[in-house]
Image 1 (tube, rainbow, N blue to C red):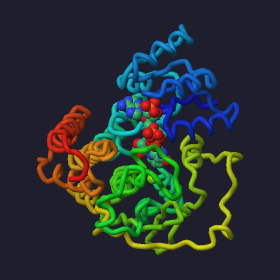
Image 2: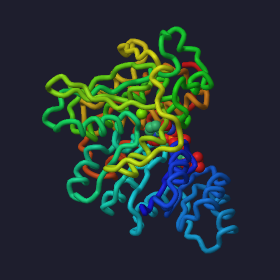
Image 3: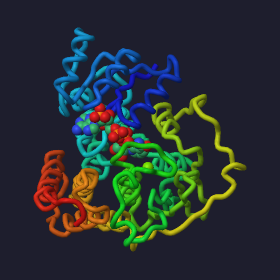
Length: 388
Ligand code: NDP
Ligand code: MG
């Protein structure tokens, strides 16, 4: 039996992970759960999965959980994520909080020599070089990607040797606004950006998919996870989201992973790797129903998320952390109706242009760069009213 900690249990990945665990019977045991604002759902999850430890973001949540489970160890606030990761008696840390707030927990999980099932891509983007150095220091620790593209690449890479890899091809659905041009995007609303054609996900990542910043984050994530340089990572729009990503080897063989677009698959694989486990949750891919697979280039003119990410990634050092932090605040401001959709790109670009690169040598440096970037974006754009 594998003992699992689920960080971000109340989110989209978290609830999918709990469904995987529920369906696996005796294979997995939930040791700890974290939620932030949604303590009502967290309470239901505690009743069902009986964890030994919990972390919650609000005092109200803390009190309600304590009242019902007086003997449970409960951590309050973001610090709780780190505390959970530092526990000894577990096998897998699923990192599925949203945003750079997940970095420290992943770091502690690595120092604890555990398996990290990593959904929280912001960690790998903002702190990738540091995380990789740490993985070298703690050889028993490992990161198994949960992000569907990276799980696909991870699985495809099993088909050859590292030195035989010619390129990684990351597929993208193209997001909600595929085919639209700048003029139309100026006026789009939050509700429009939240309507994803293929995947059901948390709000932040759904906006990121619409702007293609998500794909940009994934390019940097792939570079950090698999050590492939940016000139050998391509992005290809594939609206059906059936091929989750591919690896081209030096003999020009392309190995891909396909499946229905359901995050329970990569989550389960990150738990069971190197084994696979029977999947009784959903049906297999029906090729006849899918019938056609199509491919397009990214429209970089309109959707600048990928191009800006390559720029950040190639600059290296602290630039990806700036790319990520600027985007996190930009998405928050867009969701609050303070800026128009296309301003997300302006904010990222301006933040990067004014940034002076520093080496990412510790979590403290990542946090400082992250905070400086956020403060600057808030100071310039936080008071905007609507379109800019
Ligand atoms: P959600 O917004 O659905 O869930 C986020 C989770 O993090 C919730 O449990 C939330 O708690 C918790 N949380 C939010 N803010 C904080 C905070 N400051 N401190 C502690 N916990 C916090 O996100 P998703 O599940 O969609 O995404 C999670 C991660 O996985 C992201 O990094 C995303 O990029 C990545 N990912 C997601 C995919 C998907 O299909 N959803 C696919 C691939 C990657 P609460 O709700 O209780 O406030
Ligand atoms: Mg993805």
